Amino acid sequence: MNAPVAPHAVSVIAEAADRAARQQQVVAALAAVVPTHALLWQSEDTVPYECDGLTAYRELPLVVVLPETEAQVAGVLRACHALQVPVVARGAGTGLSGGALPHRMGVTLSLAKFNKVVAVDKLARTATVQCGVRNLAISEAAAPHGLYYAPDPSSQIACTIGGNVAENSGGVHCLKYGLTLHNVLRVRALTVEGDMVEFGSVALDTPGLDLLPLLVGSEGMLAVITEVTVKLVPKPQLARCIMASFDDIRLAGDAVAAIIAAGIIPAGLEMMDKPMTAAVEDFVHAGYDLNAAAILLCESDGTPEEVAEEIDRMLDVLSGCGATRLEVSKDEKQRLTFWSGRKNAFAASGRISPDYMCMDSTIPRKRLADILLAIADMEIKYGLKCCNVFHAGDGNLHPLILFDANDPDQLHRCELFGADILETSVAMGGTVTGEHGVGVEKLSSMCVQFSAEEREQMFAVKRAFDKEQTLNPGKVIPTLQRCAEYGRMHVKRGLLPFAELERF
Image (cartoon, rainbow, N blue to C red; front, side, top):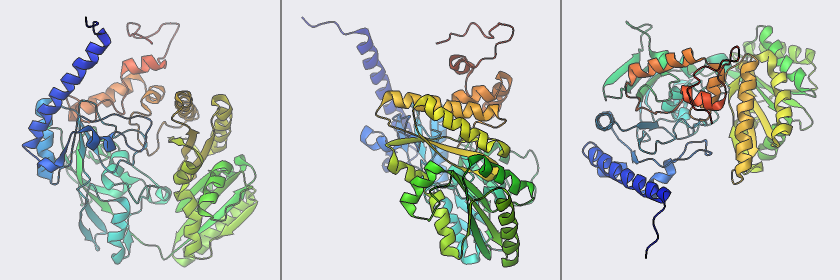
């Protein structure tokens, strides 16, 4: 006689059957608007899409679709809207916050085939490109005209402009030239209903509400980006970089604040602590000072006269702040060598640890040393190592927590470590994110920074664009329930608000 099937097993079987039926329904609907070769639904085909650059969280999408035209994207969105199927837009998958994490019962909309440079306008100094064009490819297309695209995330050889807009990416040179927000003029995007909308303009101003800043950094929750017009800037005649060593982290942090206080805005101002310096030096052999507690990279660009004056001013400030070693790049090759370590910090960390989690928060510049010392204490508390590299000029931290994902306990401690860094950043007057987005990684930490009223306002904006909340659902904005579970509800006079919500 056969043994009875356990209730849990019955539930799993029923869920699998429901998923298979839903998958068949969605594939049939999408097959009417895109070619068969643009649809992937077998598990062996969808596995490459199970996560973005944050590999700690994974999920197989129901279906992956790779449209080739805006009309096909519109058709996909209309079909999914009719069926109330969640849609997660995906670029190159280099994001570090889980913003492109698939929905188990949803469609992953890959825009990888939108990779054409539409036009480069030398006179207007603009480039119009499809959303799947790589960040670096924009500068390559503009190079014959003596122009380039300034925002340069470390992943610029792979990341796409659509993803940059979604996350409001920065980079080494964002201190002087601004974030993606400051370098985008116009965005073409499709609403959840499949309607085309243009945000911004190539003109100096446009009528109506300026919704472009709302779309930049929205992480695919408001619309699906298909085309972007960006500003281009002239290539500087000369660029030189100072490598400054400090034997004390606090002195290095004070030097960053002193440079800005002196009225100097470097083209780039980056900082690496001793563990990170050791990791990248072994990888790129840039000539970094391995005895330094921290290293600053300070770059100046412009005309030869401007660069010479700014370099001298920065050298004076750095010397006055206690730098133990100062070296100025002699030529372009050495300058690129100085930067190669910073650009390869993530790759270098991957050589010394099975896994790492790259955090992203922002603090006031004057608190740089405080946060680094706090992170050092956290290393002891959680029993994990952390290498620090960040955009010192605007206080944007990128701590890399080293761990082994095969050890569940290490993963758990890593998550606690990361949450502690974010909460400490907020306590120091900063924010939980700088340029990597919120995604799923920082959902709980959003409960620390924003009140229930503020989060509800965010949801109201979301509903205005996506009433049914099917575009990248479950990302960026934490629900009241999640904040309650996280234990970050504000308690006043011993009274817990929303006491009816179950706590775990």
